[in-house]
Amino acid sequence: MKNLIHLVLHAIALALGIWGIYAVSKNHYKSGIPDLIASIPGLCVYSFIVFFFPGGSPNLRSGLLPCHVMLGLFVYIHVVGNAALGLLEKLTILESGGLEKYGTEAFVVLTLQENVRVTTIIYNYKCVVVN
Image 1 (spheres, rainbow, N blue to C red):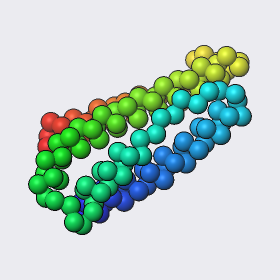
Image 2 (image 1 turned 180 degrees about the vertical axis):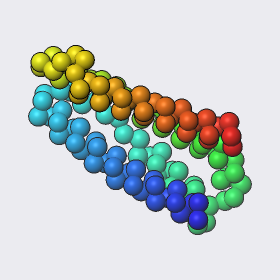
Image 3 (image 1 turned 120 degrees about the vertical axis):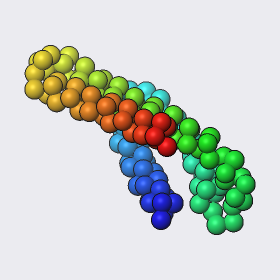
Image 4 (image 1 turned 30 degrees about the horizontal axis):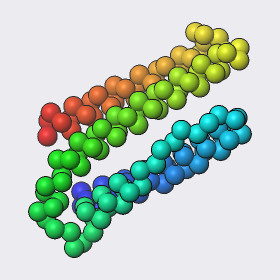
């Protein structure tokens, strides 16, 4: 059951990732901003084959599990960092367009960013230390 939930969450993340990359690319194209998006689909396909393919070797799975977990946490932390930087970038662009530096919108963005950071720290503590 845990593997099924993990697979469903990966499928949702993949769909949202594709949608996000499309939205960012479209926005960058319209704004004339150069694209710096790097994709790693090979890693996703390899992980899918190793961990969810029914004929996968249990020895291979157990040997790769620590690397899979640490790489997953590494990617998750970097995704959260990129999201935080994206929020700050958007806030900076809005502030240069006349938005108040300490206005309501700035407070909402910074609060959202801090909530994401705290949630990430708690989640990683639970995954690494508790387990």
